Length: 187
Image (cartoon, rainbow, N blue to C red; front, top):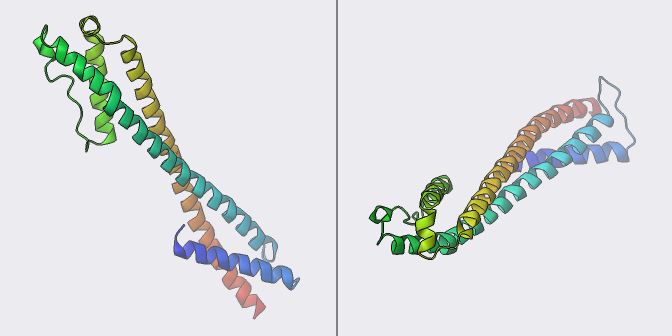
């Protein structure tokens, strides 16, 4: 939440508390204690939704980094080592199982791993005959699916965060309008 939104929400809370403490219910078209109460409650719900979205985005990003680390340091290194041994028998395997660069984007990394998995499935018999565990391909597929789930979780968290932020901006504008009207009526 940015500073302006925080200030406006604090202002609405103060106005609501003032109206409560002075037991003043300004009569007008939809004005009075009910409107600030409603706006503050709605804003509080949106702040929670915004924070949950941010937390979900951060959590899935952390999971994605862990999955990527597992892929790079264990599964893909093992696949590459087996492919080097198998390349002595089939030299077309040379360079097909090179590890993606560390700085590759996550989307590019996933595309590279998917390509490596497809090639490994095509050459499964040869790779197994040179020491690859048959379960490696299943592990790679499962890990890729987990990584794609984290991407969807991250997108959903970002959607919640951005949607709540947009709604908060609208409520802040309405709060500002209501406070001006109430201020005019109270004076």
